[in-house]
Image (cartoon, rainbow, N blue to C red; front, top):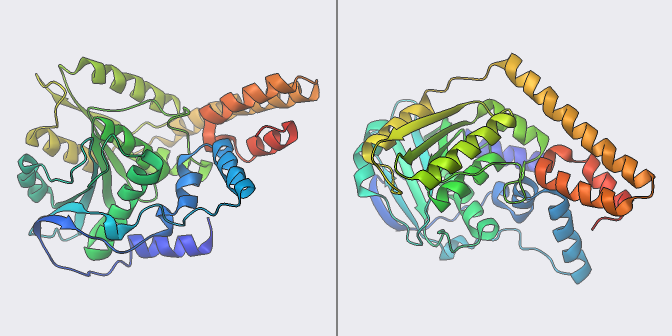
Length: 341
């Protein structure tokens, strides 16, 4: 990452000035500040697999098209916001919420819980399940966090992204790509395995930070059987990828519905009660993943050297989807050697 991005990130997390003291429920909020972290280049680098990002870049070059620096025009966007009246001594915590519905709203049943935890809540309009993920839902979440942290005193150790149903699945994607912004993720009735074409792993430095510093809390109704199964698959996948700081909050008798106030209360407490990472266990797990990845990349190289370019290219595509940024830069080098585009 360039020095300019790091300087902006430091300003984002540490030096944000208080630009407003407005509290309570706020609708139709307009933000105006952009971050390099929400740029099209950063979204691509963090949330796309390396080969897919390379394809997009080369296609743009061939067409002579220049990608807009920021996909979002904030002057046209609206956010719903709730700010508790009492600021905790260490600063507010923050929950950026990705909804499955198009409207920006603050669940009224959550307000007393947000007050109790000193948690600011923000959610974007037109960021529901019908909206494009890379061009809207992902950058809107990052920009919401950035603008709130510019306006209010927020504790950077307690910045969370969450969502409900389809929005929860997007929240997991955002948390995976932005562990330097979000320290926890609230998965309310929606989750996925990671390491796939839909949710590729980010570059290695970011993924190591995700493994070490992100806490994931699952909260799903006990009668929501389909999402319970999704949670099980997601947790198994995360543990296989050496992501070990996971917690589950029970919602007895609930079906596919937004978390009750009591469940939100338990979820926010779970996000705050980090268990930490056992370094020996993490190191052993990482070494296993590295061995498996190296063996697969070696296999691609062997296939290419023996004249089996089609088989090598096919395996490389699979590795790109599965290992994402962990396979780079070697995956990019092999793609160039094999002529994979």
